[in-house]
Length: 553
Image (tube, rainbow, N blue to C red):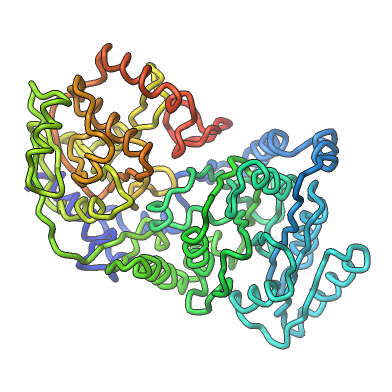
């Protein structure tokens, strides 16, 4: 067994393998306990957490100057007239909230440029923190939009939040934590998006900051457009989440069995019911890291781990799917799904040197199997990789192309999906090339199945029905990269989701063929509109080099 094969076996065994789902946190991967501890407390997207505080504060000041509106902008937003100004119920459960956090949270709502809101506060604080209610009543005397209820006892985060919902009157609900802050334009941007798109469910980008200084920025989280497979793998939506109250359909907001991951459960339910989910591509939520918060380290609330696994599992089971869910040690609230189903048979079609889209279309049509695995000569699954891991996604009716990752002999990435509309030719930019296969990836994406616009055909699987529905390959394309891009975009246009399963690993020698000049002309002519738009899974505020870094970094 080669060194790479040994590393891949460890990758599967210790990072969420189906046969050892409960050992992922206790196992000792090859990098040791210190590595796991670091992963549990922050991922690759941290903004230089090791840097001196004064350097990080300077970065934060520059960032805030970029994203906060000036006085003229605030006035323009306040004077904006909407055809149907919706009432937003900003829901905040209170529990022993520190005074400075409480005041800053309330002020950030009062200072919204959009004024048609109500702030619903349910207070489960104990007697030693009676000041919480006194402070809120102080605000109430000056602003009737602040609504407050003192609970007879603390009902926990789910119960306290549900209590807020009971006396809310808005047709849209915005969820807000008692120690965080809203960007002044957060509700304005939500109202604007609703009026422009008719969205009944919205989410924004967010940043985290440390303690009492908003300039101590720790993380900038730039999210993809709605990505259902990402959402199963991690609650990437998180904050700010706003939705039409009617989407709850009498099922309530939070359920106590998911305490610790109640947001993940609720977001899975609401997005499943929504007709239009809109991603507002702006940093509109400021999430405070401090001792005791989930953002300060998952070890602060370890019960959230099992609750999150159950939320994902139950969400898929409501769709009639049988599965188990395991945590991965890079972060315990990142999940790997293992669907339990019969092993459907599939055909393997080798992309020979003289094959074209036309000959491959003929091979697919001639196949008597429902699923097709495409490989080029020399592509081999690495020991420890199970083709079932890619087949289980190709089976799902919403999935188009299910791709794995191609590695070179040293375990570095050769192919792991494409960003459309970038790169030297403005067509595609392959991502993560040259990175170790077990590196984090942006927001830990190398450890959960994630949606991508496109991927190579080499090592990918597709359901024959979906392939034919999309119209198959263009007759004249030849390389796996061109063929994969073509069918990926056709599937996207038909409403399918394409995925990369990072746990499906192939090895392949040699270089990867790029697009020929004729192929470039084809894509620029055929997919002009798609390529001119920002890739839905790559944020417009990220650097154009495919590094998944914020443009200010």
